[in-house]
Structure formats: structure tokens, C-alpha cells
Image (cartoon, rainbow, N blue to C red):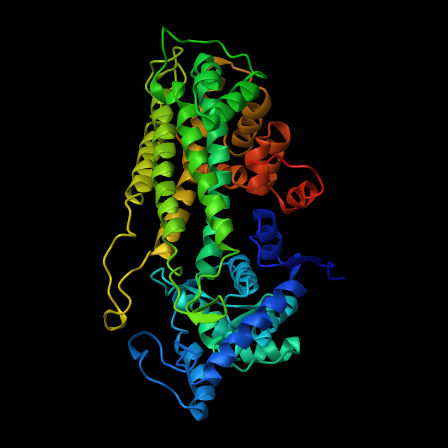
Length: 527
């Protein structure tokens, strides 16, 4: 029996991460509010009146880009609108996840419900029909320079007309076959509908939301492995206590979590006057990182309730838009790339401390006394390579010059490229967390430490997949298994349940789908 899907009413107001998680997973079915559809009808009347008056309307009765001055007769409009959307099915490469595509369609509907687009009700209904039937277009990810996802949204738009590819009931097939199997019909693109299905950044915003949420989870785990390493190194907690009084609100939040999480494990302190900065400043580094992620997250969510179309309907007129460049989101995500490099450096430095033989009498490379082994020296080099990899993807790209469409389109944000680099950083950070946990567990066993709380949870994951190291052996598969479990929603849910940062965890809807749905029925903390 199929699970009954809950409903989420779209109103034109910004969505939340919990909405996007449930829509993306296909467990919540979006619908359009009547008030939003009333705004759609009003905007459509404005657009149709403009067309009937003989006014050239960009992308409705004229060409687009370099062909903006080409005006089409009424007899040409059907062929133009169908051809426009199909011409923009040009994306290539690996496809986005189905969760991103589901959310992109929901965002497109939601921004149209602002009443500033001029599309038809039929277009709204067509998107909702795909979501209801769970016919999910295949959207190849290379096809946008970040000033409208024309080559990305175009793949969804083409499927609406019955061409392209879609996934239905787990099978990838031609759109026409998916429509036939689902018992739904293709849509006729009316004037304005074609451009409304192309000239928005909905795929990028959906992908940005998913990647930022994944980053929030990765940072959550890396913070925990940082605390674990600090304990193995005998770090003083004093800087974490003091930052609650002298730091920024986010630094104080992280300092409080570090104190609470470490209270369960009273490790012996090996500090002489002061610890290295990579230990003392964990709260500052991660405080800055989560400040950026929260700011970027709020900006992305705001974009889910704002029309970034061109043209737009404003004050009863069809106007050229001045709001279709997603530069605000892009710049904040470029800041996130830099933040990830700082987090990676912080973790790598602790990996070096764990293996350099200068804390708590730990042996070099964590080789147990009396054993003949190279130990963890190569693993620490891998941690350095991962840090370098994360750092290499942190340089900004949004200010690059790129002029297309005969000079008409000479600004771009490159948001999809920034998101792709962000995703690659996340994969690297997950591995770095696994390495830090592995090294920390080895140090604990050498010293005879008995971690508790979150540190014990991490330790047990490591020992589930990797035995205490006494003889040189291949570690690749062990590292990957640790990485996979630490990054799992089940582990993150368990860690949050034990030591939450509710304001952060709930904003990003971290953890398993079950946890997200459970939290919907509880009071959450504003951030």
C-alpha cells in the first residue's frame, strides 16, 4: 500500500527547510492556495490585456535574448512558445537528485503565486500534476550561468510538453511514456508560459537549499569530531567557557555546546599555559561557519517566495525585471566556500597534533609502543590533501566576465557552479571528519581513555568499522565505512537527540525524515 502523502499549501510566502525536505522526499504533496491562484489570475489578465493592446511583450510575443526585437504574429505564437521551451532543453552531464527537481517545481509554483509573473493557471496546474503523479523530469546539471536557469528549467519545461526524459516509479524513461503510464497529458504552452517555465533560478535555489542543509549536517559532525579530538589531546575547556561571555552570539552557542557535550567525559587536561589555536578557537571557527550558513540559509529561503522572472507584473503593468540575478545567494554561498576551508584547516591541524607525538605522551603517528609499524602518517597526509582540496574550491567565481546574447546579457552569478563546488567540499569534509574520528579513537585506546556521551558515540562508530591499529594494514575501506555512517541521517539524528543545538538543528531540519516530521509538531527555537 502506498503511503498517504501529507499536503503543503503553497501561498507565495517563503518555504522552510522542513517543507523542502518533505516535498523533496516525495512525502508531502504541494497544492496552490486559492488566494495565490487569485493573484495568478489577476496577473494573467494584465498580461493578456497588454498583448491584446498590441504592446510587444518580451518572450510572449517577441523573441528572447539577441532576438528580442523579433515580433511574432498571432499565428506564430503556438509554434514559438512550443519551440522556445524545447530549444532550452540543452543541459548535459549527470542529473540532479529527484529531491532537487521536486523542490524546483514547487519553488516555481510558489514564486508564481506572488502574482508577479503573468503565467496561466494551466501552467501552475501542470507543475502540480507532475508532482502529484510523481513524474519527475530528468534535469542534467550543466546548463546555467546563474542568471535564470534556462538550460535547467528548460528540461522541466520540455517534459511538460511531452518530450525529454522523466523518472516514474523508479524508472527513467521518455517523457511521453511516463505521461502515458501515469495517465496524464502534456500541456500546451500559452504566451508567457514558455518563458515562465525557463527564466527563473528555481533549480539553483532548490540545489542551494539541499547543499546548504547538507553542509549544516557535515559541520555538525565535524564539530563533534573536533570535540572528540580535543578530549584525546587533553585540551583545556577554559576557552570554551570564556567564549560564552566574550564571543559573538554564534561563538557563544558553539562554546555552550562544546561545554555541554564534554561535561560527560572529564578527560585529563594536558595544557601548559595555553593550547594550540586549533583547539582553543574551535568555538570561534565553527561560530563563524554557522553564522554564514544560517545567513545563507535565510537568504535561500527568502528566494523561494520572490519572483525572479523577467518580465514581471507590477502595479498593473508588464515591466522588465530588475531582480532576476541571484547574486545575493551566490555571494553568501561563496562565503560559505571560504568557511568550509577554515573548518577543514581547523580539523586538519588537529589531525597533525594527534600524530606529532607532542601531547599527552602520544607516540608519533600513533604507533603503539613496541610495535613495528608506519602507523597513521599516511592518513595524516590524506587529511592534508583533503584540506587542500577544500581550499582549492574556495576561490570566488561570480565576478567573472561572460557576455552572451549579442551583448544583451552581460551579467551572471554562476550560482550552479558555486553550488557544485560546495557539494564537492561537502564530500571532502565528510571524509575529513572520518579521519579525525579514526585518529582520535586510536589516541584514546593508546591512553586508555574512556569517552562518554557524543565522544563515545563517535568512538563506537569508528570501532565498529576499524580495529585498534597495531600492524600496518589497508585503511581505505575502513575510512569510507566510518565516513558513511557518520554522515548518515540516522547518526546525526542520534547525536542531535543526545546533545542538540535546537536553533540550528531545527532551522535546517537536520536528521532523518522521521525526526523532521516529529519536530513539526513541537515548538522550535527562532534563530
